[in-house]
Image 1: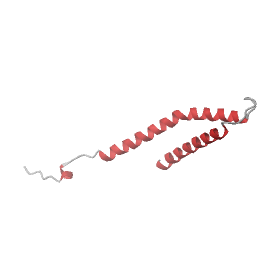
Image 2: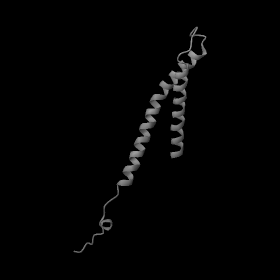
Image 3: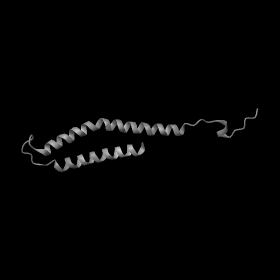
Image 4: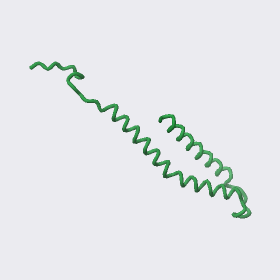
Length: 91
């Protein structure tokens, strides 16, 4: 699960990085017509994809954070017994 989630996060980061770099490089292009310009179509598609990925990305990050917090609580929640405290019960 760790490898798959790390790979998914890496893939999302790379796709966002590629999109930001492409938008930054092509933001100053000279457009002659919005309908026939392939760069404008790509920019519109990238903005739609980024908007569509925002909610699942936030949900994924929230899930991973909750999973990590749950694992931390499971590790630290151990029962304190007299054996662990090494106490002699002499009555």
